[in-house]
Length: 366
Image (cartoon, rainbow, N blue to C red; front, top):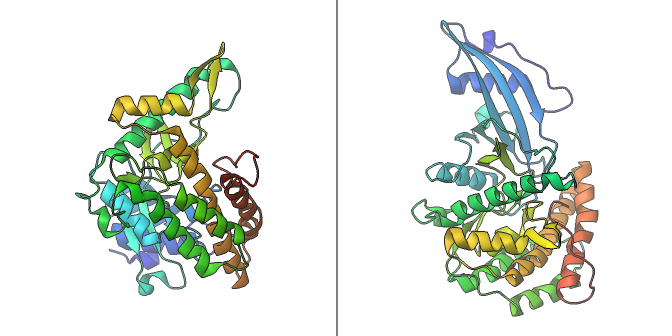
């Protein structure tokens, strides 16, 4: 049997330090193959929290040949801008693989310096056939209204699965903070985000102080029980095939808390669908449908609360990005995060405390 190092044939990924040669060598050891040829190594253009790479390869093992597709996930050069660590995100996927929640199979986490060389830690999950994009979803033609409704209802069904999973049996309490009670869900989120803002803030942020006082004084009830919360969700975050979500992805904001938070963070799947003056879809129809699935009542006021609260997350992203810029990281996305995303977050906070009556930024502007 020839050595992996001698037999690897690689594709080239110019202009980035995640090169196909390194990936092929690493995969050759993991797959116990004679040869590995990387045929695709493409960075996903969406998202700002971490890097996501699409990876395809051809391999030989003795007389056998095969192909595989994987997803590789790693932090930005200066680290993630989100609260959760990369290892925790890997563990979230791994635990959900034992549930009815559809996620990609997570395979390996690499943190061994002997294997990494000068590369960053990463984890690899199996590729799930499908697409994050949904043709015609945003076409205003009324003939696509049934599509918007069907996609929205499918997403609500999957959120109900997430909220209904037994997070204690899956040992999520080992990696996520558990609120003392449902009524403490919002407070736990506020404290976690503001701790990070205080640690990394590069400028005074009096609006954050004012907004935190308002959020603490106006906390929603937290619902009937503590649920597993996906966090970032909706358009661009899930994998669809034939109108069905076959994999929920991007769990970096996953937490334990109030299911209203997930409805606040939905991107594009709760947009109003109105025909002949009748609302066929939108937030309230989605909450009504969720109640038929779960028996749980979520007040639209609680959803609105968490929409405003997401302003704190935006401020945290901006300060983390600004801190990385100060430390010498020159990624252009960090400049955008530290400037425009800070402004978006402050708009949401100002709206919450009544300083402005402008519409809060939509999810997806991040």
